[in-house]
Length: 100
Image (tube, rainbow, N blue to C red):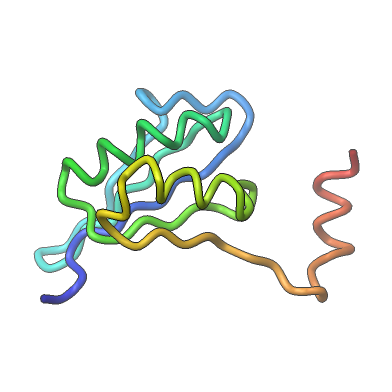
């Protein structure tokens, strides 16, 4: 089986998962992206993605390892869950974006 349906969850101010969602699709592959304001919202979003046939879920770097584990638990490990990470070379740029 090959990857045909991929899910990405991003967290950002003012994101409503019922509104802020999009799909990019070809005949062979679909990518589903959903925005949430609070990381806890990703739990129900991930469950819905699995129900819709997503085979792999990736979380933006704002989730971190604790929320990545919570999403994995929420879906009972039904599909692999990963998260974006940034190396040390990105630290100064990240501090500019998130100064607090």
